[in-house]
Length: 221
Image 1 (spheres, rainbow, N blue to C red):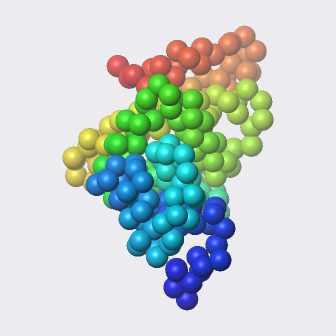
Image 2: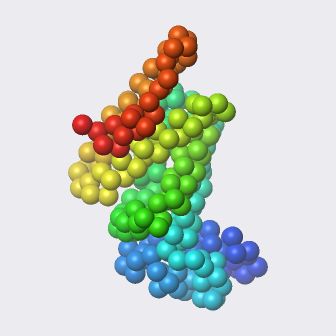
């Protein structure tokens, strides 16, 4: 059965999910625009008016859909049963490295997306999207924290992910070795922070400065 047949009676959410990777591929040439949606719809033989309805709302809706598709693909490539065989640092590193592998064919689209997400009117939504991805990665890694740790873990991972992307989009080294080295250092910072928090909880005398720590992750010395 062809993709077109599968989508014949699809919901808007299903059509949005099917179009998302192709929109990103086209966004490298057309930008995050209606033209990218139209091209993706033509590739899947979807009515362009239906595709436009699925992505009504502009560039941020398209980018959100693409990142959602990355989250789904990440869960497919790194299922919990696979991650459970690793130590926690290895899990987080594997999840972030796999995200980069998924996005690698669309680095130009990513560069354009990051520019759009950094616009003042889009920062709130961009932050929510980043938080959602960080939350999903921690859940895949087996995290079940529901206290203050729930928030600090996601905030630090969001900062690590964001700073790593800024290196990744311009990395021309072989096999992205520069990005991988940067990622390993940042993950080391996160693990060190988690160790300090654990020691502090044992002493019950330490209140972490989350904002200062995130600043160090985003703007390392």
